[in-house]
Image (cartoon, rainbow, N blue to C red; front, side, top):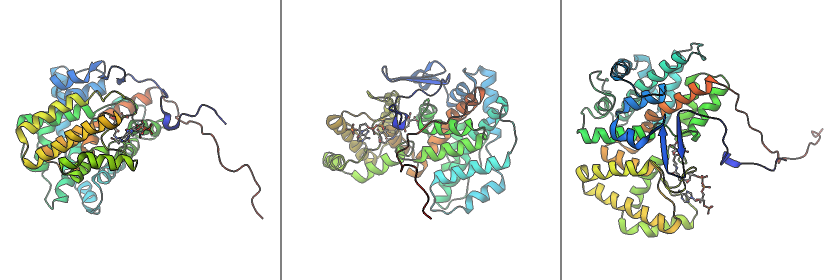
Length: 373
Ligand code: SDX
């Protein structure tokens, strides 16, 4: 038996990447060499998406072309809409999204795996269509007809328009873009690694994205942003935070939105998102949100006092999406709308120097024995 088993691949470096790097010691994250806080402060979501796919920020012409291509591909065809409407209304929106990507894959069976430009075109098509799927499903849950995409609006404005029939104030749109920029890419996280494993078999991009959506859905990964919101609502009373936390820790529960495999001194993205959340609360919170925000702050303090564990990005993002008006089941699908950029950048990178990902295991089952007669 191997003596060097790294369960959960903890600390294992499995390949190189030029897309992003997480430096846990300095709590920093860069995309293509640019610090994520600088990107979040000065660049649009579309520019960051371009950076992840093409390795550099777009110039004005490239950005205009990128925006035009995205806006032109947002629509779902009639059959696609019917497929999604036929799904049980009780199914989770992540299941809807996963089914939608399968549908898009079934429509596009082209055998052009090694063609970088073809894969980037598929990625852009998904980038453009996923918000339409998420908005359609949000409205379906509310018994409302879908609102078609508006190509005259930017990505974020159009998403709000398709969800709610209106575009919120510029500060809300910018806070949303900040979440998109921060969620976009994070090296070999579980869902990205799942996408790379699937790609390494020379399967297609849609299959890899479908698998990544499945991996992101779990509450130890992307599903944590929904779980955070459920937790804040369940605690409800700021005065109950400490007793709730003590009980949860005593029963060995994981506190959603806290901890990280890579960062042990705090998630590099949290301070940026916290600022955005503070601004949202200052200008857009009602009494109910202010109460939840107090639960949020007290829980963060109590968690640090008891376990010295910091929040991860899902903690502030969850409350931010709530303040923006999204229902909780939409939170992880919005994460998908962002991470589709990172996933597909990694799929393309994996294909440029592919090697089958196939680790070993140490066997602990019965010794070889005869099959009973
Ligand atoms: C994301 O990898 C990425 O980059 C992911 C991500 C991305 O952008 O792609 O950043 C997005 O997935 C963020 C993480 C979202 N998940 C959660 O918020 C769920 C709650 N968090 C945890 O379950 C946990 O912290 C993980 C899953 C995030 C990390 O788990 P690890 O690295 O396997 O660490 P661990 O569970 O072994 O914890 C080490 C110690 C343990 O204590 P001891 O047994 O050593 O005493 O820390 C404790 C844990 O019990 N701990 C927690 C905790 N997180 C760690 N205890 C209570 N609540 C927590 N949240």
